[in-house]
Amino acid sequence: MDTISLKALAKINLGLDVLGQREDGYHEVRMVMQSIHLYDRVEMKRTKSPKIHVETNLYYLPSDENNLVYRAAQLMKDEFQIRGGVRITLQKFIPVSAGLAGGSSDAAAVMVGMNRLFNLGVKQNKLIELGLKLGADVPFCVMRGTALAEGIGEKLTALPPMPKCPILIAKPAVSISTRHVYEQLKLTPETEHPDIDGIMEQIKQKNLHGVAERMGNILETVSIPEYPVISDIKNLMKENGALGTMMSGSGPTVFGLYQNEKEIRGAYDAMKASGLAKNVYTSEIHNNRR
Image 1 (cartoon, rainbow, N blue to C red):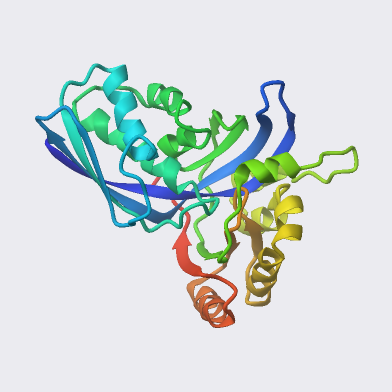
Image 2: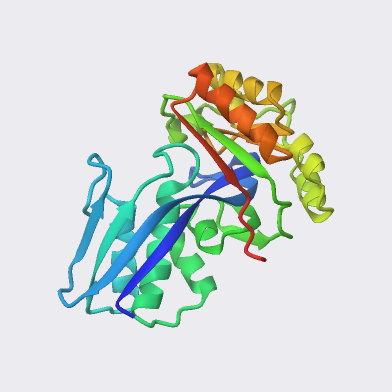
């Protein structure tokens, strides 16, 4: 195999809780992670030259070691003494800095691609372990599907597949620093925490409505006051039939779960007409188990 084409799937959080800050500065989290069918396309080709060459369709993305895709390829080359090189063409469709783990998913796809292109035979668990060197979301993006993420996001437990449903995704024209959100997060004994256990139980029961009712993201307590448009988008989704809405990650992207295609088409049109979001997409749940 000399070439390979991969889909780098975006992720949403069905629940995101922060338990506290660790001594090393990282935050202890408890999240229900979910892959969705919004994806970047990663094309990879083996080369005789040992160099890593990265091309993207976005002029402002770096093509050197400042790009996570490049670092993922370099990590695999270093870890497994790969002498050959690779040409990577990245077609970005997932919004950048959106809370959808686009960069992490691209890196995960490159790791998987290097494994296959160079016939390394590396097990998924090893790729997950290596992925943490690139970022806290990379391990889940290697695993995909539905999972509980704990620690700083690296401790993954596969969950039963989330019930399939249409998803509306809307990203306003703002950028939010993940570091800033975590730095501003204030946890007190009165802080309301999302019902992560309840979400997992409803997934187990295959109860879409139950999941939607329990979704929650503790980081909204920081992001929404600073960017009220996030709340406006959530409200518009609810007014147009969403079973539940939530900000994904540290934002600013909001998603809504819908019952059927007819409702989501109407909600999509309403969101586009509102001007609240710069990017609007429809998608669906991705399950590893078909």
